[in-house]
Length: 265
Image (cartoon, rainbow, N blue to C red):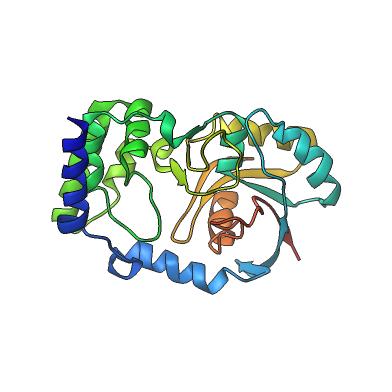
């Protein structure tokens, strides 16, 4: 039975929901990609007439059980100044919390195989475009909610709109990420799935309370920027972070610069 669903999925992805480049996606993604290209190699970014320096920190490869707060205290805090902002890639916090799984640990259901082929088949990322990541989404929010999100996403396509799927599915699903051939040393596999971190807001509040530095957990890529948690919570900091991180300074590949300091000049 599973072989049938795999054949079905391959046919849909190859002949019906064919791969799309960023140029064929909706305007907001294309705009995000253009902004990323403008800022990706910048060491400074201007926001509201203020210039911020982007300071990247090369980190070790974090694994489950690592104490991220202790690492920040020992290796990041000594380099900070008053009013700095610390940003941390969401995958790092998730990995240290044990929210990463080998691909072969995930057993997709028939529903995962039925649904994932209809996810946007893009060349710049994976998201829920594979049975294993779709199964993780089903496990997190339930099949009924995924079906509702999928239906509303289909209605978006008919009406030439976008955004309903993740509005319904939520940020926990949107941040599900697939890492291929990544150097994190999971036994028997370098291909793994990273889920959303636990309580990113609480982690940021703890950093602020202990070190008096603003902190954010970021889910940034080459087309969009999402903030999973930040502290102190206010619209000004939210808007500032979304703009300053458009160049995705943490990177998408093996840069190992998952911790960034934003410093006003």
